[in-house]
Image 1 (cartoon, rainbow, N blue to C red):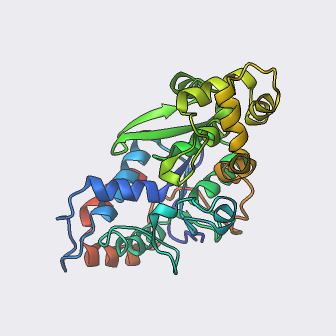
Image 2: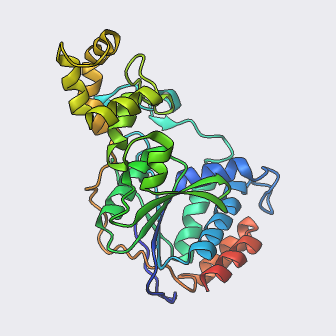
Length: 314
């Protein structure tokens, strides 16, 4: 999905800001009281919170371009085919494959999408891919500096100081973010950004249904990746009787061979997503569809947050 901006002014220069939109509206939903409601009583806490998040990000970082990256497929079948447990614990309806989402959040997502479109903020989701993959593709192709706003550590693998790609990792709201660059990753995890995906595959991640290797937690995974360089070399060491690996680690890595054969592909963010033609990420200085936005503001009681967002854009 792309946005045309018939009425919005454009700006030039500055960074490209990529939003992990679902990560941010979940954060907004849990951070803003559900008592925040539209005139008809419908909760709009996630909508209002996300609008304020974007206004704060635009004010703090002055991006020239911004893309709200969406989960067109939150649990792609190709990842599930490789690791069936991938995000399985989050499935609300196995028959439909829908994600378990709070009852009062789901109805707010279409409102969020309508507001983004009316403002003129590019919104992109691609069938068969997660927002992470859209972010990975846009970040890899970008010529300008990139800031990725997410609460998902998986995107740390995209950090690249040489290409000026960093992550803004919110601690509270989005006004208090850790800036994750190559140095921050080494300080936190003891691995290079380019090693993060292999480290994550070895460690596993229960929140994503990735089992990892038995007996290998974060510290041990970092030690092994640092010592051997990458996951392929770690596995080669496990197959070598005279390597320095302990017998227990050798056994556990060997026993996890089936998982390790496929885990890197699941963990690594795709960087070749077929993005829609005509994507215009340039941030407008005026709303693309003022009348539609005015109607949305009245219908959902969004006047104050939208005023703050439009002031930030202007």
